[in-house]
Amino acid sequence: MGPLTQSIRELSANERQWQVLNRQGHCVVHAPPGSGKTKLLVTCLAYDLFNRIPEPHGAACITYTTAAAEELRRRLASLGVSARPSLFVGTVHSFAINRIIGPFAALLGKPELVKASIASDEQQEEAYRLAVGSRFGSSCNWKEKRKQIEFHRRRLSTVEEWNRGGEGLLEACSSYESLLRGDGLIDFEGAVAAAVDLVEQHEVVRRVLSARYRRLYVDEYQDLAPGLDRLVRALCLRPDSDVELLAVGDPGQAIFSWNGARPELISELSSLPGVSTVHLEHNYRCGEEIIRASTRVERVGRKVTAVRGGGEVLAVFCPAGFTEQCHQAAAAVGLAHRRGVPLHEIAVICSMNAQCREVAEVLRGAGLAVAVPGVEYPRAPVTLFVESCAAWAMLGREQSGHRLGAIHRRWRRLLGPTWTRDTDVRLTELLVGYRDKPVTYARRMLADLLGMGLRRAMARPAQSDNANALDRMQHAVELGALADATVVDLASRAMRRDRVNVTTMSSSKGLEFEVVLLLGADEGLMPYWSSANDPAKLEEDRRKFYVSVTRARSTVKIFYSRSVATSAGRAKPAEPSRFLYEIGLLHR
Ligand SMILES: Nc1ncnc2c1ncn2[C@@H]1O[C@H](COP(=O)(O)OP(=O)(O)OP(=O)(O)O)[C@@H](O)[C@H]1O
Image (cartoon, rainbow, N blue to C red):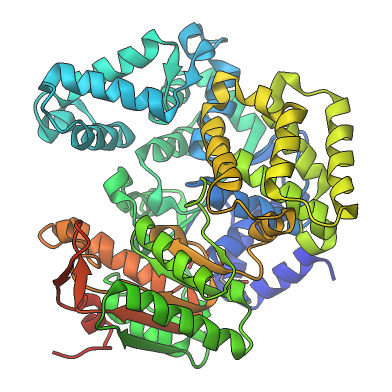
């Protein structure tokens, strides 16, 4: 039986998933953790492409982060879906830039958009500093103002909302955008806003997109800012555009409202005429006890039924502080591993990147292999490409799940106009060559790829984000934490095999592990100091805790110290996290 048939057969055993596979018209799926949202979305897309969307038509599948998009592509490939020009799988930014602005801006007489390059982090920082300084004076905390401005830009706020946000904010935003425009630049927020405008204002854009992408699939709807919601409404819910929508999400896992997301949009979407709603309730991932404990923390109040029995949730007190938590976590990893749990089935989750680095150091010191995705270098298309090259080269297609065809397509996208067929041949020869060499360092492989045209391609302005990620990867493999890493190490990062995953609570979203070790469960970190008096932020921290706990299949250990480290590094007494009481592990 092929993998798609197998997946469809599994869905058929669940009445509600089956209903979604056979839906007619727009459908919104609300579903708790582990209930198969992603599996359902990907299986529906694969099934529809084979059975309901004849070529040359296609579909668009949109999610929030590059890592989530990568996971969707991987799962689609494993179901036998191959690329077609009218199939888009990626982030909302990428859809806005490559599938809306790229094809339509010139046609509609917007030369400034056609020529604009994506601003690098440094260029954005410089423009924000200048714009905020000129409106609020140089003594103003420009980073704080930048956060506020970005929030409103992602929200596509109205003038009233901007004004409610604070005096002068909208002016500073206009001057930021005009500084970028003056330099021929645009940022992701600007690109999404421009794309929304093109789709909403121009019937021709809606008609062409509707013909090309017959169906639209959206993952993690609760985390997407209004920009995507506006695109969805314009493409799916207006009389002159008839793209069929399948959206999945969970307001109980919304953790990006601080960033402009509006989790209530998925419920609003559900209530629209012509949109059917399905609530999933079986959790296939977590043992029964984990579901019972986590349900005490979340506030959505829905029914979740366990498919698996067992599961354990424990608290571990480490009175000597966070460093002791790291050592205890290393011991817990060792114990689980000795009991037969592979290292990649163990996650150590912290609230901040700095803690991830600290615990990663301790784990490495204990002789454990560690993956800290996104901390040593960002997960961008180019760094994921390098990892997948290593995986294919060292492990082959069957074992790695990475296909040469997909690697070539990414290579072609990255090289852009500098790509030639010959570069595909050279890339293949290079990768095949590593298999015969005894040990090749990751820095050598990166140097080879850079020399084969990657460096030159990164000089294009549109690649500035990739270029930045690649610089950080280069630094990590030449001088940083990965200086001794080999191509095999890079391969296992792509596979996430045989190494403990260290990740932040936010980045743990969408992942699943046998064992989860959650560190830093003290007031001040969980929830954050700044959330304690802000009900909305407190709820978001609670949801992050809920997301982290529900990553585990069988064991969750939560570490606390009754103290937190100050910025000066001193231990300050703190209460255990209130979530430890709510989940039922501590009692007052
Ligand atoms: N009908 C099914 N039969 C068997 N297993 C299933 C079924 N549906 C989902 N699963 C399994 O449940 C697990 C969770 O699925 P998936 O990752 O798609 O859930 P999710 O809802 O996206 O989770 P989360 O929101 O927590 O990230 C996976 O291991 C998946 O294979």
